[in-house]
Amino acid sequence: MVHGSSRVLRGALSVCFLVGAVSTARAQATRTWVSGVGDDANPCSRTAPCKTFAGAISKTAPGGEIDALDPGGFGAVTITKAITIDGGGGQVASILVSGTNGIIINAGANDSVILRNIRINGIGTGINGIRFLAGGELHVENVTIDRFTNNAIDFLPGGGAEGYITNCTFRDNAGGGLVVNSGRVMVSGLRAEANGNGVIVNGTAIATVRDSFASGGGAGFGAITAGGVINLENSVTTHNQFGIFVALGSLARVSNSMIVSNTTEGLHNDGSAFIVSLQGNSLVGNPTNGAFTSTTVKQ
Amino acid sequence: MKHRSAEASRYIAAAAWIIGTLATVASAQTVPVTVTFHAGRVTLTATDAPAADVLQEWARIGKVEVSGAEPLSMRRVTLNLADVEEQKALEQIVGAGYGFLGIGKSDPLPDTSHFGRLIIVSTGSASTAASPPTTAGRPDPETTYEYSRPRNATMDPANYGGVGIGATTANLGEMRTDPERAFDYSVPSRVREAVERQRQEAAARPAAAKAPPPSTNVPYVDPELRFNYYRPLKSIPPRQNDKNDPATGTEPPAKKSGSNRQ
Image (tube, rainbow over all chains, first blue to last red; front, side, top):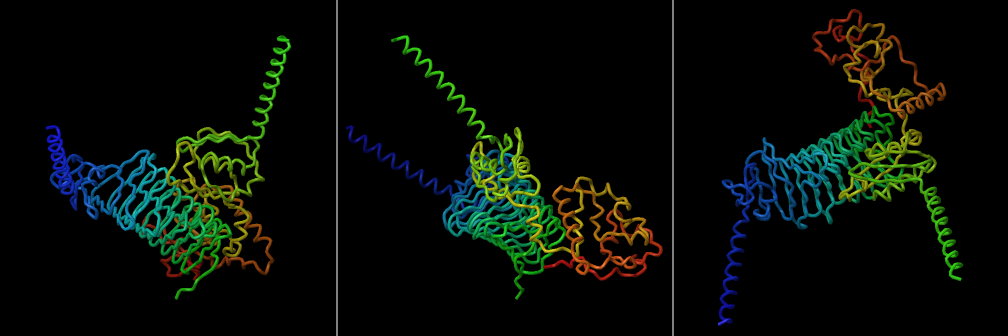
């Protein structure tokens, strides 16, 4: 009798497990929604949206997308799979964090993460706006990151991950705007305003920056590690302490850019690094302009 | 026997106390630097200590990688800072002639510096010597800026050679070359020193190497100097006898503002 009831119990448990698994699979939609008036208990559908990105992400399939239905603050989130988070154009999809990171990405080696149309505000106590620890690609488009104690974007993935930062604004982040510790990052249309530094390569990594400006920081653009490379095209570095800062065997290549009106030096080189002009630069109006180590003629 | 043993233990206790006191005093003398961090701010005391030692202690307590601090071993500092921003404290430690570049930590630990790396750099004579000369012994205009005052507050022609509203041909002859000269910003001491150094270097150059003095007949005028940034051009009354006035059709000399392209 006892033996029989145990078999029944085991069968019932199996059925429950299967039902649970099926319902979980069903909850992983390719597109989910968040709303300022949503609830994370909802299925994150358009008609029953979730309240936070963190609540929605578990209900979104890998490679899927979380969209914001209306303006709101949708909270910090940790991303562990390929996903797109889109705050929507023309409205405020915000992440307001205190004492922590805004978005942490710790995804698979081939996962592509896209963050679009979001404002991330550290209100003076948040640590990093976006912290990219692992993943294949990080795309950040039309994102504004303000007032973090460390960096707007801290890019430190293992392997050969790539970052694409497009049309973003980083403001008043005490540590720095973009810090590239590893991998490769392409930056286009960045406004780095009054951060600790603008874009710094702080490791064996490459950052290529174009159509951007950095102002009001320690260094506008720089590389400070042997094997670190920063390429700069059609950009402006001004009102920083150092326009371009290279040290410890790193390399900067600069073309068609303005290094003007910085407060200490236009080009700073500790003597062990290289700043190569690819021509077309304006280096003027700095108390000490500094010098390019060489010029490569355009071809 | 018992009495003698008690006396011996009293001597031992006294000796231990003296040794302890001496050790405390000695350690206080050998470690004249204390640094503590809390919530992005620092409390620091240093008494006649080499700045390099202060930075070494900063690196140890703050878990920071500091490089380039060796030249600061000759600089001695006495500081007593309580709960100040790290950047302000570092500026006081490195002093004039040096600067630093700080990189924020990726993952800050509690009660440590929020910098992960600090690179100390010379911003004084060494860097200046490595720089190419600018235009013929003339310091760049920004070296004379004072950044503290709003721009509008200085729109007095007397401050900038008479260019702008009400300028005359006579004072155009004394005109400096860039409109930014009119701005009144606060000049950091190291900038003032750099300007003075450039002036001295220019004066020390052989006469043949010096640039010819600017002609008073045809002064160089940046095209922007003709602009009026505070009201539309239309509202400027035409200047009589002004050779550089666009209304008379005379162009300024041919020097281009973008001549320092490299």
